[in-house]
Image (cartoon, rainbow, N blue to C red; front, side, top):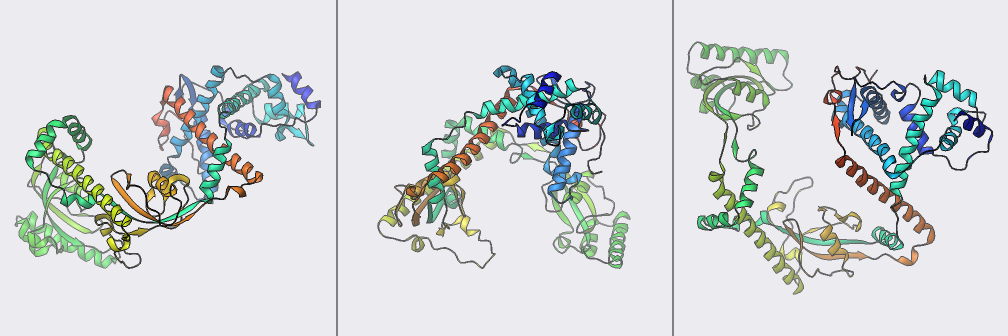
Length: 534
């Protein structure tokens, strides 16, 4: 190998350089990187089909990603930011993907020769002196700067080149036809704007009725569907959480309270607390001393409080569920002020069985189907009225609202709305969202004021629309230069999609085991303790 390197040092420059490979290699195996460290089985971040990704490799990659994120955000990046970005998980996922790609070289019969490695290294600027490859400088840099032998360094470089070759082989299938280029041009140069009204089941829920007898018959015919619905909603709808019925004495403390105000509030709650501890009826004290106007007249009754199921916040919920019936809490403070609680009745958690829920689920599903049918019928009637010359704005006037005011009635009542001009690319309509069927129906029409042949169904919503404007693309303006640009853009897009689908398939077939300790943001025994913020 060294002989090959020496010969390349004297040869002319190679026209094609694997730039991306060199960049990747420097990132993974640059001076001081963990790629040069001895791999030891004692500390690992993941196992990919039995092959190790070491904790030290992960630590170095994470530290590099951390510094990159900090640079992108002007140096302001903390461990809390990394947690929010799930940076450790994403870093490990990248290392796993690299390992999966490398493993594919054998299956695809891809190899990297000594000559290819030599050519790539000879072209790397880091090993050149005065624009030429210098073997002696290269050897000194590898052995002294990187702290490893030349053969080991070249094997690591070879592995990165293998990855690049594998990816290149996979992406060769990303071809773009002339028709695709034309379609892409049209998607960018065509536009439309519509006036529309939508109808969904929610708008007709109050008009959809079903009797108990109909629900029972429906339940028998749709037993499997009802059971699935029950299982899907078991924890959110059919499980009653553990709760404690409590009373409260409250002394509010405003967010901007002065120390004197807070001290005075504490004195008032302490006085009330002393009375109930001395045996005075809690409800009576609450009526006299509580300063929460919403509950004091009821003797501080808050009803049943469950974790995450009340409007009182986590602190009060935790305190309530910590008590047993008859117990009085200590004075505690939360975001609203000081409180004392008394527990009165415990309600254990209970999952309502399917037999009890079956009828209600059947009623919900049956009424939902009927509400959806009513929405569809109304959409069809509306389209017929438009064909007879009626206008959407007259049939379903838009409710006027002040700027910035949220209009909930738009969810409950059909109202006419309009879009800005939009393109067919991606199936997105402004003010509506991702509606590919509606977008396709719009661009199937070519003349302003045109109507669709039928209402357009997207999910449980039907849309009726009329074209406000329609701009057509002029293919005669698509010259060769733009064709080339669009083809390159589409090819790049296809390559990304192809790579994403391929790597996802590799992940599904692979056996991947992640070390959860390494992914923790607290230093653990299974990985190096380091501070990326240093």
